[in-house]
Image (cartoon, rainbow, N blue to C red; front, side, top):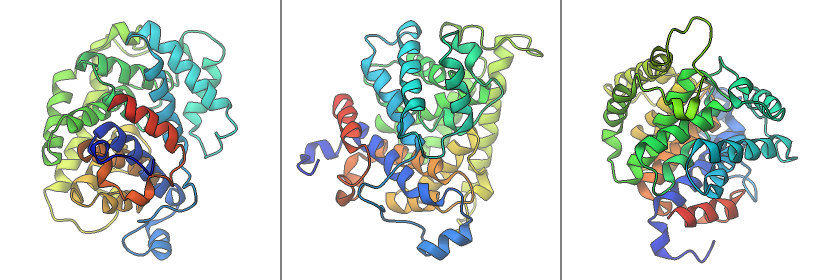
Length: 338
C-alpha cells in the first residue's frame, strides 16, 4: 500500500473502508473505559495514534469485511443470491480463531441458529436492535450500481440475519444511505436533514421481497406498522442529534447527548455528532468518538466510515496505511469499488 498513487487517495470507497478500521482500532482499547480513565491514559483529546503493528481491530471491522466480501462475490443483488453468501460469511467469521475480540452476543447467538440451516427469519434475534446490525453495513453504501431500493434491501437483509428488531433494519438502511450520499458529494453539514428526509419517506415501506415474513410476530398487526416503529425510533435519535448540534460544543462525552451507542440508532446518531463536531479534523473526530463512555469502537468505526466516504483515503494519516490489520482486504475491496 505504500506505493498508492495520488489519484486513488481521493476515492471514497477505500477511504471509507480504511476509515472504519481506523476508528475501530482507536476505539478498541477504550470501549469499556470511562471518559475519566480514557483521558487519564491518552490526554483530554483522546487516542489520536494507532497502537500496535498492525493495529488490531474488533469484530466491527471483521464483520464489515464479511458483508463486503459477500457483496463482492454476488453475481446479482437479489435476496436469493445474497442471503446464502451473507450466511456463509457470517458463519466463517463465527468459527474463525480470529473471532476473539469480545464479539456481540446477538451475532454469536444468531450465527449458532443460522448454522442449523433453516430460514434466516427463524434464526435472527427478533428483539435485538444492537449496533452490530449497522456497524458492519457501511460497505453496502459503497457498492457501485446499487439503486436506492437495492441499497435499502441489502442493508436490511444483512441486518435481519442477526438483528430482527425493526429499528435495527431502519438504522442499517440509514447508515448505508449516509455513506452513499456522502460518497456522492453530499455536504456533511446537510447530512442530518438528508437522513431525516429519507426516514420520513421510508417510514411505512416494508421490503417484503427482502425480508419475507420477518414482521410476523405477536402484537404486530401489519408489516407497515412493524417497520414504522423502527423509523420512528431513528427519527427520535435524529431529533436528539439536532438538539445537540443546536448548541455549543461542551467538549464532553457526546454520548450524553445522543446515547451510548450500544443500540443501532444511538450508534448512528453519536457517530454523526462526532463527525459534525470535527468535520475538518478527521483524526479529532475519531478521537472524540473513542473518548466515550459507550460503545467507543463502534461509534468511532461509523464516524471513520462516514468521513472516509466524504473525503477519501487522503484525509487519513499516510503513516496509518500499512499499519492497520486487514489492510490487504480493505484495499482490495476499495480498489474494486473505486
